Image 1 (cartoon, rainbow, N blue to C red):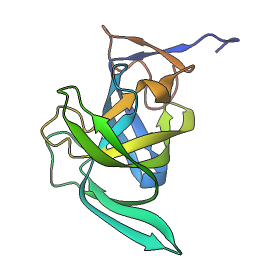
Image 2: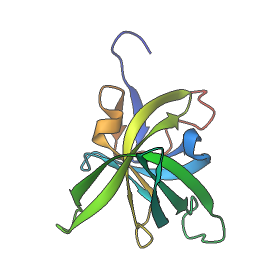
Image 3: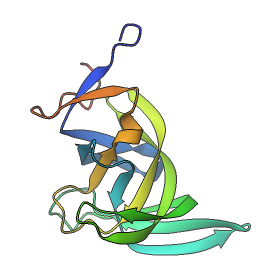
Length: 148
């Protein structure tokens, strides 16, 4: 990438959340969503040395419930989030690193039940701001090995 030239992402991409042990998850790149969201279930808040943490489980593969990953993270915040249907929900917010191809950087992610949704992860506009442009007519422009 030269100077301030931005790479392109498609409307859906493979990415990883290495700090959570999620090595591959299909995400919808959603410029309409400010914050990224991850499908979780079995969310259990707990304190460690006076700091709020959360344990949760993830089904990283769409339409596959037999693969589960147990994750833990420090809670950054709790926020009321309005979904595309206008419904409000209070969600835990964590900070973790996202990897798209060879690039890896910290993002904020809300934890929510997305089981009925087509994608287990949304990568919101704050996470990709100043890094990527999105081509809504293309998919998988950033290959998993980062050879693009």
